[in-house]
Image (cartoon, rainbow, N blue to C red):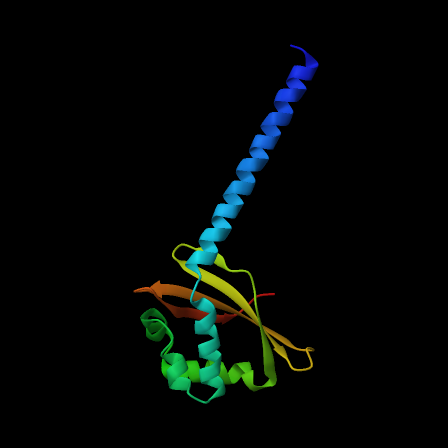
Amino acid sequence: MDATLVKDIGVKALLAGGAVLVSFWTFNAVKLVIKARGINPLVRKFFDQIAAGRIDAAYGLTSKTYKTHVKRQDFLKFLASLNLNKYRNLKSGTPRIQEDQIIITLNLKSEDKKEELPLDFTFSQIDNDWKIDRISRANK
């Protein structure tokens, strides 16, 4: 075979492979964005409820699974251990899909931006509504 023909076929195969990868990435990104609609308002509502002192309302935004594993008293202890009152800014990380759940690392930052508290939130969709299924300190 002619070397230019082999080179030409190799370049076309490489371009085709790249196009497939870009298409796959774009499809998954769009799927994730569409699937994750409703999570940001839930996060905002969760932290608004805590800031307003309505802990039971914040606990009500969690799933039945969460409530089975984390009783109200444990939820209160967990929130107290986070010292949330010193954080003012919230930055959401890139969502990750794991089975039927979406995991997002939320970074809470102090007002002076010197301290940061990363929290992993796991969300499950139950009857078209998102619920918080797990909250934990992120491993960074």
